[in-house]
Length: 520
Ligand SMILES: Cc1cc2nc3c(=O)[nH]c(=O)nc-3n(C[C@H](O)[C@H](O)[C@H](O)COP(=O)(O)OP(=O)(O)OC[C@H]3O[C@@H](n4cnc5c(N)ncnc54)[C@H](O)[C@@H]3O)c2cc1C
Image (cartoon, rainbow, N blue to C red; front, side, top):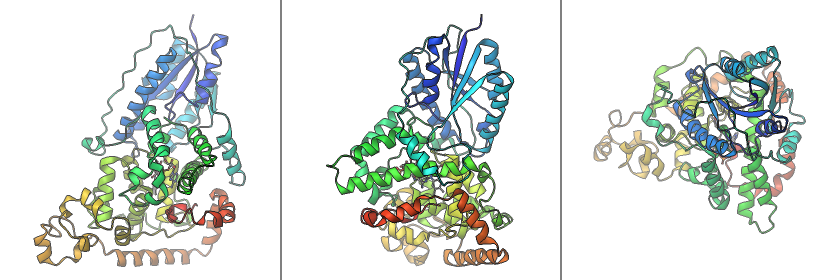
């Protein structure tokens, strides 16, 4: 007779703590059903242009730890490779599957379609699929009127308790063997310095953030010099679920209740808490409108940039060879480490979109491959916001020279990532093209040979971009009507509440990255 199992399908939730699907499946053990923890490597997914070897590296490390945690309870992880429906069908031949348990996934269009196929398979085979909310993102929400309240309720709810034992499955299951996926996307040697996966790493990061590093969160988040240590660096752990957002929100709010907490820490933890809210706020947009991955949010912008993609500019941008030192240093740092702070991500996209007039789709795929923390819902919505295709707060433009002077005044970050500029003085580091030839020779950096001339004049290119936007809007007199409708559906309702508390928080937020504070 076949064994009865409840399958727990792990996706972007690689933990056992605060894992509702696992807890629910474990509650069936009493009635004689065993829990089969499953992870599926889907080869077609790994061919997509927004997947990358570094994501797999992070996931593999996390799967190893997850397997250890599950094995300690009694039953380790089963790893299968193939099309998900085919894998499930094979398992159905071996086991009596009583139910399937997973978190809801608000991923890209590919995972959305795969989930639809799984649902059809479940219906056909009379298997109930229990899908649980993964964080504060909700299905079938058509506007944002009550969203913030639901988010608060979700975060306040008790965390799911991890099971204490998982009875061993008798059928023979292959031991965990993680495949080394060969993905020819970024250079293989560019994956060596990315963040480590696994829950123990996530807990250590969180502990060092709330214990010490977070003290400088508000003042340190904007500059690439300080952000890497001042920010939490939890993003890949949230993206692949080694930590739950709820456990972090609850801990943060507990700390905020401490009356001894000084104002610096209060401000830091409040800013951090807001960003955990944004995490879900952005993913909710893609959950509600999956086509934001491929279509301009404001459809009226169709045709604005699509028809004139400059390949040479794109190559220069993605390889860190635009001739603008901070842009190039950020891109090279990102390729090497898999992370850069919010302001610099926004600046990279702004430069690609306005000065280089590149449609956002190919830059989005490139950045998705670079970010270890790639999270479709945040990613596509942020990219569109920074490239001006949302219609709300349309022009988020960063001047690459001013950013360089403000965020890296001595050029320390620039020189770390662009060694060819290492001898250039502070005076010229932000605009090396202004160096006289004799100076270039003296500093061992000839423009056009050792380091590129700027590929565009950023002031002229920006003026042209503004004009194009303005002309485009003139062609569409109903522009604001469409923009307002989009905002009504997807915009935050928090601004009103924020305005009310703005006075009391003004001081605390004075050093916070203002551009990041603006929510669409
Ligand atoms: C063009 C662009 C693309 C982005 N793509 C991604 C992505 O693919 N994955 C991703 O996790 N973040 C993305 N972000 C948001 C943000 O830059 C990162 O979340 C943040 O830099 C991660 O570092 P951290 O964990 O140290 O953040 P912290 O500042 O410590 O913030 C804590 C958490 O809050 C959330 N968060 C912070 N800022 C934002 C924000 N602006 N919007 C939504 N959530 C936020 C993240 O989950 C983050 O881990 C993108 C931003 C831009 C401008």
